[in-house]
Image (cartoon, rainbow, N blue to C red; front, side, top):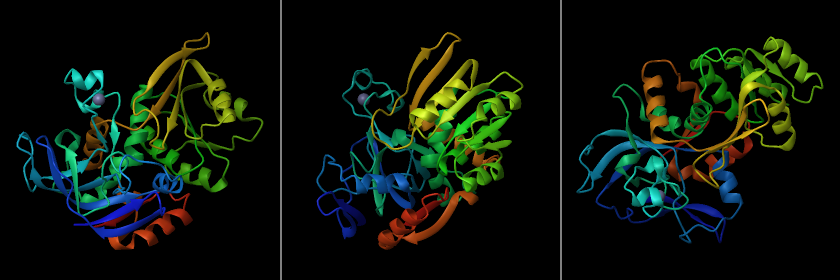
Amino acid sequence: MRAVRFSPVTGNPEVAEVPVPARRRDEVVVRVAACGIRGSDLAWFDASPAPRTPVYTPGHGAAGVIAEVGEDVALWAPGDRVVVADGRACRNCPECRKGLSADNCSDLRFMGEHYDGALAEYLVTPATALVAVPGAMPLEHAAVLSGALSTTYGAIDAAGLRPAEAVGVWSSDGIGNHLVRLARICGASPILALDRRPEGRERALEQGADVALDPANNRVASYIGAITKGRGLDVAFDFVGSDSTFDQAHAALGARGRLVMVKTASEGSFGMRTFSEGDEGRTVIAHTGYRVRHLRDLVELAERGRLDVSASIGAILPLTRIAEGLTKVREHEDDPRRLLLRP
Ligand SMILES: [Zn+2]
């Protein structure tokens, strides 16, 4: 099959002919219809990491059609349309040894990083990572759900966001806008976007933020107090991760407020940990990645028209134009739309 292969030695992704990866009894082979590329992929290539295999197939955030199922796979059949969650259980941690699902694994392996990914004609994945795509939904739309949208949705779930709660989103790139859209669907009110860039604030308002503020403005704290009628934020999401955003977001929390620090790069733990801090019952939550159930929820929201995915798709290029695709992503770093490759 044709696949993008990345060598950490040369630092370049190249298209090559390779065998379809070996499949286990509980895994399936998916013919990839579309796979996204985004800023986090560039960060990964540029960092010249040392993955387990010296040359590997990158790519995650993909949808396609099942081509082959393993002997132990009962719930799926060839021809099923699916979107693929990015993780694979390690099979070795205490949770895996207990026989729990991939959602419980404490050492999840990442697609396109620890095992061959989706920038290829075929990918191999555990059957437990699949979510069915309804017949009316284009596979390109489904591919976009797996990635930035599911990570931000996972962050909302981690916060336990409830309707009518006041939300603040600190962001410096497009991903915060996904959160604004999803928080709106979840009933958050009011929604405040904090972004240093004027164009970032403008986009946040287009996506449904009630108010957009410049975090560098020294009156931000009093504005937040006024907008929330003195109660402060119920949930703050920090996508920037600097000391200043943490301090500002934490100080803006009301009683029992939750600050979710969202790490969008796929390094570190896939899970989340919670610890209490301060004397008002405030909570700080570290969040990264998402679970299969988050992807399932997003498919439901998109299928019923709650979430419009079409606006999240940028250009669609053939796999062979990977280099051009990466250049486009590099040049439009602020663009929240996803570029897709079609093998
Ligand atoms: Zn495990």
